[in-house]
Image 1 (tube, one colour):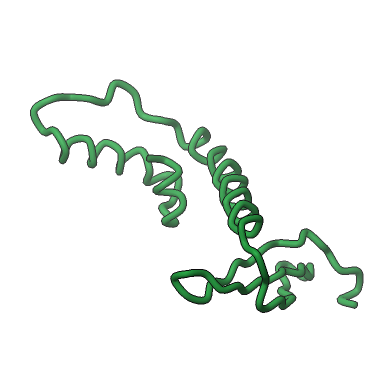
Image 2: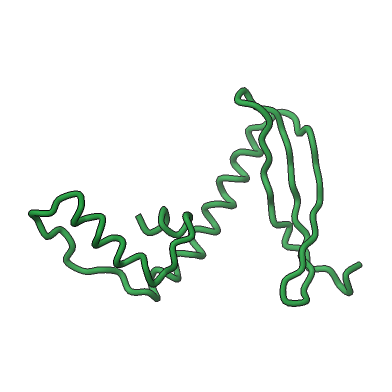
Length: 110
């Protein structure tokens, strides 16, 4: 439940309250929650969420027979340039794209 909320951009300080609200809505007559997770624990889950997302992207790309498009995209955060890779491919449901972080930090924006 924590990973699902974090993937939908719920702030870590709101996750515990949301868990309590959801459990009370599902079964209002029974107190199901004995202990709520701390904010520090929830913040640690953000790195797990990043790893799971990268793993699912790699799995998706491994099952593709042929890539249709390949683009690189640069961005800058806090005066640091980072390159990303965008891969497009055809599936039964139509055209899909996957954005990957190439973890390449450019020197002097070159």
